[in-house]
Image (cartoon, rainbow, N blue to C red; front, side, top):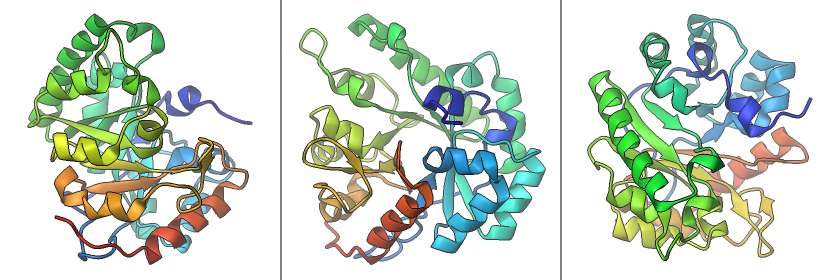
Length: 282
């Protein structure tokens, strides 16, 4: 059964978080990537059919990190043990706003049990982000979430879509969120595809807001705007990763929202990134 992103992310509480060890896992070498991760929304249907087997296949491809958006693999302890057995870590998990507010106690309990590091708000509902006042309100909520996450031993981040790049009354909401949140407690998971789709420049954001993007979603974009495997489109990945230190990148996750063959897509993107070389601009 095909799942929407909302149904995939919903329920991302105790079983959705995965295990992680702290610290940067990306800049191992100056001219190539270290650990490469994948957002599990890419393989959501395969996970539903065979949770453990799908994770095993991702590990066999070469992935070392995963980012959960949903998990029906069992208890948090069982999930952590499975990841450990496969040589995988889960540095981040997508959550919804209730997980940071009314459901915070349950989130903390699970995250502590599993060793999660980054807790990511995956989206803002469209009816709650129509005006600049809405976004100012969200900036305040992000700051509150960031403080709570820090106090509990985690890091908070927000994942964008294209809507945050569409100006409202002459102002770009993404810029508003960056300007009105605390750099010490609020990070951003930049989705490269959606920034480009919204007409933004990842490199310009890295330069204007250095250190604010500890997480990246890595997904390809063709000239016509189609989402494609990493390396198959027009994104200059070498230029982006050459500036990863400036951006503050700690972890990256491959993603494709609707691949024809999810595991083949995951493999193609991994191969491209593993062989990518670039000149470090940091």
